[in-house]
Length: 338
Image 1 (cartoon, rainbow, N blue to C red):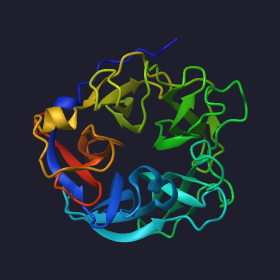
Image 2: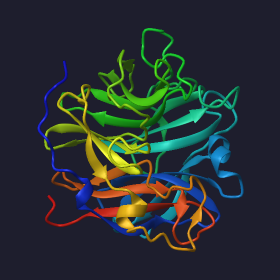
Image 3: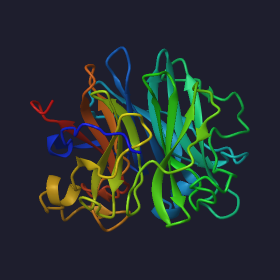
Image 4: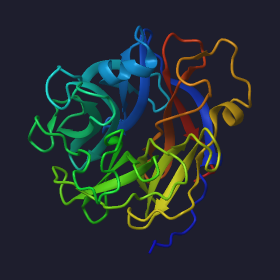
């Protein structure tokens, strides 16, 4: 039985497109997860890899997690350091990707994926969680064991994503009001071959995380890139809508009271980049590095001090200014939409 929720204001109409957040010559940038520190500065944790390699395969091997900073949420953001990268050993030998940064009490918590570089890529993707007392690090595995990921595909065939062809990916961590931790992830359901979102739950940040038996989204086509946040006493999960459940190339906002049952019908989270924000006018100089369809992916939100979505950060496979690599973009919630 699904939990009834109040319909939230649709976020999609409230965003205004500002432009680039990160443009790093020579690098492909993907994902951009924000956190604000006490000094008011905003830090974006991103995945990036050298642009000299083919986009579709390079991230699986060369992607690393880097930190960029700015005095304002609107940027410009400048590179500070490489936070995590593969060393060719263990479950996280390569392909650090899809970062999600959170501030939990006095700790910074960084969640991302990596893979062991062995066998067919996809099923070998795993999720790790790292913690640090300062945003500059040093970072250490939250489970205390660098040899083990925090979350791996289930061995139990009764769990929905057993033998997922993408392993577990696209992580988003959320501390619930009761103090437990929900680790949201993308996987493929072999029963219908669709990418859906699942959740694993732990009493404490270091785990262990126990995976729910069933997926938490009732999508009728593949979705991914979940970002979790609490808004107006409801648990929200924003995902991409790459295949047009509501608006192809836009975003979906799934809403829940308990963080487990997200209902059958999502709302719009953001609009299509090409048709809505650019009004169909993609610059002639734009370079499409990944996917010919000009859209946003991997959405992540910076919340205001009073708990409202304030800024939205997304990468795109299209460099609108003709850059030699992909960039991260930023949108701002218009005043009066609170």
